[in-house]
Length: 606
Image (cartoon, rainbow, N blue to C red):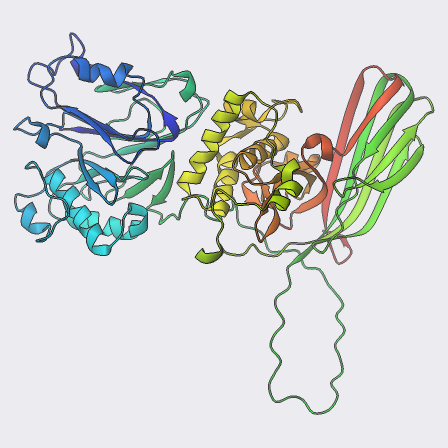
């Protein structure tokens, strides 16, 4: 029985693949092995298909899979022991056909009944006809013929539900485990009778092991450029002892750029299409006195149209205390405070109080980013400084609109007018990193773009959700000097690191992004309660026609009424709550921070 393997990477990768049965001393070569491999070179819709139906030992073709430096792609499809009885090129898996300006590749194990040509007719004007005699190649031509009838040019354009119905229709005439790709998406289908189950696994960095093994082959991912690749694997036989999942009978999974984008078992929608990590709770009730006008004259015949629904309002009392302890007395120092919450149409500050001990000269002003800031001069001798900010804030966040109509949707790359680019330039420049690191991060960002068909909002939502899902929140694992590339490489950090990474990826794609500091009410909905014990950080991206929109990659959700906005800037240094310089004395410094975000109902804490 042939063995199937497909891999979808989030960016181009170059795995080294060894066919074990062809190595010296291994069984399987004396009677002819038969194997085939297909992949798409970077930025190419034409597939490279290499297959050898009569291998008896390792040769130049099988060595190519292990050593050829141009063996690089985001998609690989393999069939081992996949030669038919005739052992010819035309009957060896995988099969490829050209349609709609791209190559389509299919491989299959199982067997349809002998009448498969009558059961799955191609029609009189078939756009693709089989070269060989196998039922597998016929199924590929049958799918392409149907695509032509439907006048669609990609699998995604057809619709995953309809493709799933087609595969179940073909499955009715025999056993069918199938891998299919059009160069963008990889489709895996499991036979309805659970014939030789397929398994799948999403493997994300950092990788403990670079070598994946099975009885048939070895996949080596030790190439330094591939250390940060996320891979989605489908295999007849799991390649290691990792967390593989057996597909259910009749299940169809669709992978694109290293992620599952559709699952027939759960009817999943496209990855990150307005996804929110958890459902939002009902907003806390807030009583508002409303004056009812007294009607004059007779009542109108028709009732007035109802007013548009108001965005829910949530109220919070925030207490932020920062305590600085110094080994030696401080004689003179200057500090900048950015602790005043934002006051605008979406957030109202009803109360704000700032206590500072010891007292000093304080001057309030608005900084260049529009933050309400304070400059503080302290000249007396002290070993302890305590800054306490107390706020009562109303937050009104409207529900996020559904994706705009197709005619209004923004796609990447964005086009900015010269004056717009000039105004946004501070938020378009990526951090000063080596060019090789920025190139790697750009490739990572483009993986999201291609996975979401260049749609701007879905790309951003996908990045936001993926950082939440794939990166570990590890307090103390980073510092303020940690770069976005280091976070990308280690897949761990805290809220400021995840915000910096999302900002960097967005700017590399030409999307203005800025750093926001504030608070979050975690309540009972968020796994990480530590976020409410200190300032929180997230990213804000400027979307054409929508304005600045907040994304919280630490929680994988758009910013909502749980978030209280305070300061904003290009990066952490522009928006840090408290910064300063000690001119004389001080020595070693210890900082203790305590933040309490308490919901308020009817004027009191909940």
